[in-house]
Structure formats: C-alpha cells, structure tokens
Image (cartoon, rainbow, N blue to C red; front, top):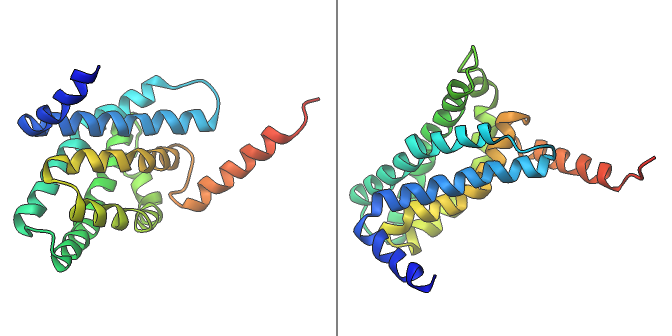
Length: 194
C-alpha cells in the first residue's frame, strides 16, 4: 500500500491527464452516491453511472484543459493574476461546466426536453456556486501545483457534486432547497415511530 502512495504522485507528473481526470470522475461520482445516501432509500447505481460517465467524458477533461489554458493565458501566482483566473473561471468556465452538467444528465436520463433542467435551475445553481467556487479556485490558483489542479478541483467538486446531483434530481438549484430537505429529514428521523 505504501508503495502505491509513492507511485501515485509520480504517475500524476508523468501522466497528468488520465490521473487527474480519473480522480476527478471518481470524486464527482462519489458526490452523487453521497447525496443518494443522504436522501435515504436504495442506491441508484444507474444514476451514479450516468454521473460518472459525464464526469469522465466531459467534466474531468474540460477542467483539465480549462485549468491548463488559464495557466497558459495567465501564468503565475501573483495576486492580480490569481484574481483574473478566478474571474475568468467564474464567468466562462463555471457556466460552461454547469450547462454541460444539466444538459448532459438530461441526455443520459433520456428526458424529452434536455434543456428543461438547465432553464429551470441554471441561475439558482450558478448563484449558489458563486458562494463556493471562487474560494476554491482562489486556493487552487495560488497554492496548488498545476499538475494537481484538476484533482484538487475534483476533491472540492465532491461536495459540489453532492449538492448539484441533489439539485438535478429533486432540488431547485438553491442552497435553501437542500437545507429544507435536511431539516425535514432530521425531523422525520427524530419523530417516534408508531
């Protein structure tokens, strides 16, 4: 086991693309599994497989290329450069990734109107993301080495995917919807059984 942990950073440097994409996809998919667990009921592995498919085919790759592109366009870790990267990420990268998630999941779920979730939930979800992602990316661009940035984003996307998958399946894209759900769940867990 210890040799695996030593080999892993070497693999990330030698094969950064597949290492980062697979880590990202695994963490993003785990976020879906967690939200299913929090909601209760049986696990829907087909849904998790859809999330994993989208994470491997689009999100992991997009993030890898996007973060590298930002680093090439705005190299370095100077405060102004980092803030410019965060601004670009939130105004260009974030909306693309969010749109791809809602449309991609609708396609994989075979929905008739693949843009319905996007139309109904995009702005709420985007605004919710603005309370989380700028801080994540500020840390990412200022502290994390380039070859680990997608994996770090994937680690942070674990929490985001938990929220995002909940929103896609039963929320409205607002943080309030998940807090209401969790309060109801807590209340139902505390109520005595008859």
